[in-house]
Length: 581
Ligand SMILES: Cc1cc2nc3c(=O)[nH]c(=O)nc-3n(C[C@H](O)[C@H](O)[C@H](O)COP(=O)(O)OP(=O)(O)OC[C@H]3O[C@@H](n4cnc5c(N)ncnc54)[C@H](O)[C@@H]3O)c2cc1C
Image (tube, rainbow, N blue to C red; front, side, top):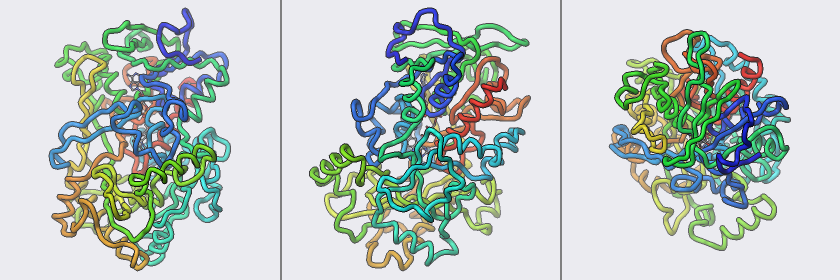
């Protein structure tokens, strides 16, 4: 059942599992564990349950995803520290604070990772269960490929045999065609050596340009809330979900084999309390995400003892890597003006247009709003002879792991600048996906309701600035193909006139931001290793009864959009938990 206040929880009910954080990882784990009729599961989520179309329409509407953060009730509204790599700017650092977590506010791009990324996870953890081959059954377990929003014939846009057809999460190809699509595909023919067409970017080898896949079904967002939690709640299962309630601490409930058993969970709705506690009889699963998870571990005395001491926190388990190793991708949306008479930029200028499209979406689930703004996506590697490799080794996991990404969208970059009152625009983002910079999440105070200090360290290494610069130059080469003649006018906005290496670098530092993919702050390492935070089975080192299932466990940031990989981690975690591993 759903509870909005701790006082409503059924008195005396024992929970086999307590899941902390009802986001992507936590939503999957809680719903799956509750499939076992004899197990009681409690999920505690800081944010509200926002019902699409009742409380907040835009969660469901794919095209309006960019309006879900920052500064909304569904976002934690974090801000980064001053970023030296971004010309001393601070940036918004969105994270979903709502049932479904960031899967309820993300941009829905669906990737399942490169085979080399997965094989590296297997290699560095010593667990072949994380290999690309071993992870395949979980793709089928999660996915259910459904028709795109416009019901077009998708033959040739993906490889059906490698996808799931019966999982809970509806996934579809990009919907309504944009003015860019045919030109992008023509460019893959004209410049095929550098920018080939890829028949399916989710085959394990994403390199090239592919048709995008999204967590969208019937023109609406799919998330861990819509696909896992809401069905579990409405089936009246043994899953209890407590929303609007923040977990403030995990605590020791006993000692097993000389190790602290951490099965106690403290929670409250405000810093003033009242504070409540619950003990899991089997396991606590921490799924508060790459920011919330290290924050909660540190508040609970699980972290580097030197850091904890400074804040007056007693060390329960000395794990110096908690909150370290934060990795994120960097977005850089390059704008071009285009010859067009109508694009979605007109939504910002014409109330009738957006109202008509909202009505169409609400009545039929169709129209421009039924598909996210991104169209095709491309994944590329620096050439083998790139000068950066004279001095640095390639940080990617292998030949199927891209260094950078292109995202096409038929819109102005509304992140950094207001949409101009005239003209039509497109963006070709050049995004860094194999960063070598490493940041951190640390505590600011011991008050769990205060935000932690978040330093994603974007563009903070020679490799990172080199690669994003080369990605911008690749985007310029792409747009110089004959396919764009007469359509593209010129570089626009902050990108206007940017040509030399020095100009590109200054432009990148002044305009880049996060792609919203923090990971790595409670990373996996081999069993017995003194580095890392969790063992390959995701249990927290040096403890009993505590496991982490969210994006913080990746030792390296995936070189693609991470939500698909987090779903796969969560599904495998369920298998491990059910098997008692
Ligand atoms: C704006 C945005 C756009 C994105 N776009 C994409 C995309 O297009 N494609 C893609 O693949 N990925 C995208 N991502 C990233 C993707 O959504 C995340 O990687 C993924 O959701 C991470 O899952 P998680 O379980 O680790 O964390 P989350 O999904 O963030 O869940 C963590 C949950 O824990 C809750 N929580 C935190 N602390 C506490 C506490 N103390 N007590 C109780 N609850 C707590 C949070 O409120 C949240 O619900 C995007 C993310 C954002 C923010």
